Image 1 (spheres, helix red, strand yellow):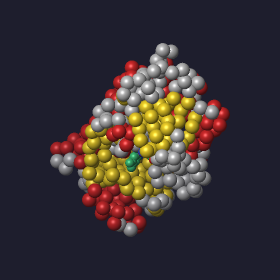
Image 2 (image 1 turned 60 degrees about the vertical axis):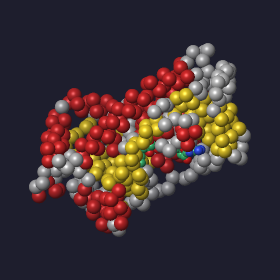
Image 3 (image 1 turned 180 degrees about the vertical axis):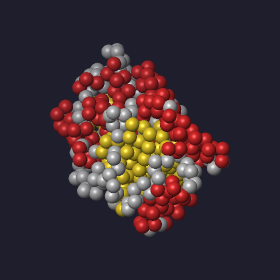
Image 4 (image 1 turned 30 degrees about the horizontal axis):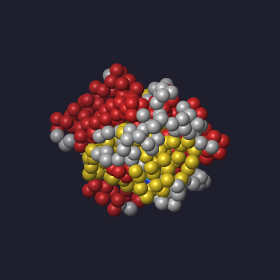
Length: 411
Ligand SMILES: Cc1cc2nc3c(=O)[nH]c(=O)nc-3n(C[C@H](O)[C@H](O)[C@H](O)COP(=O)(O)OP(=O)(O)OC[C@H]3O[C@@H](n4cnc5c(N)ncnc54)[C@H](O)[C@@H]3O)c2cc1C
């Protein structure tokens, strides 16, 4: 590929990761060398007013993701009243089958607690995050002039340059975009990844994630709570306005059963699975359901082409790390673009390989750790059940193990 003084970068996919990547590359210091970044998204990127009802799709953003969003000027667009810091996390394993424990969330035998001086994560609504990203993107596009946004855009074809030259991305109702570097941020099903001939290993978990928000009576104390049971994993994540967001990963059959329940019966099921830690929960949002699968691209880069976010790796939501992994990709690719030699161009394979090497390990480890945890908790064997109870108790007493987990979660 020819070296150009003016890098032309095209990002396909305006989800949270593609938007952050566009901003990161368009920053003056990223070494674009007078070039520009185009963002292509098939949906509308509108600046809608935030509804008063909290979004039922939320992210637990790590301090590392927050730092990135601050550096991109995005964080300041978020309303602080709509952000909830997570100050501690309590993880519950199998409960002992005694009547006392039905209402006893302090069951020490099956609980592990994580806490730090500073917040472990920040709960942010998907719609609020998207709004903040779009707002900053519009501001920055207005001042720097090096961002071109194409939303409601259909891609009619892509030609990958064989040797040298730029990739060509044809838009149905728009220009053909030449890209020295084409970045696929088009989600777990990534059409662009398939067009580049990159295979993704996919594992269908044959389970669904159910999400909804609930109003509670007592304060949640900024504590994220997670219950691992043999029929699924349930999380209560703290939200502003004395609400919790639940993410419940269950088998398809169980998800069908839960979906068939009316709101009152569904609420009772959620309260029971959460050991009645909050009596009197009231559903405060629609319920949504997502199919869960693991997707791992076998290759993340090609000359002039890179995968980021869910297009490269989609993992089980039980660790709540999907978006955080994507923001870490953005950080790393931004670093590599900034620090590349003056002789290399934006699509230089050696530069892209450094990004891939640095990120792939993190994503694979996170994906297998969540898989392992899931397998451990789905087992009904008595020995494994005992191990879950006693193992969790032992883990809770091991400061070293806890700080390792924390160090990873907080990056
Ligand atoms: C139930 C559930 C709970 C989760 N909870 C958390 C959590 O607590 N914390 C966390 O960090 N992560 C969580 N995740 C994961 C998180 O949602 C994803 O990791 C994140 O959305 C990935 O962002 P992305 O921008 O890579 O992809 P996406 O959000 O999928 O965005 C892809 C974008 O590409 C666009 N696109 C696709 N094809 C084209 C095309 N041909 N042309 C143009 N545009 C295209 C789409 O319209 C979309 O806007 C959760 C996921 C699930 C399912």
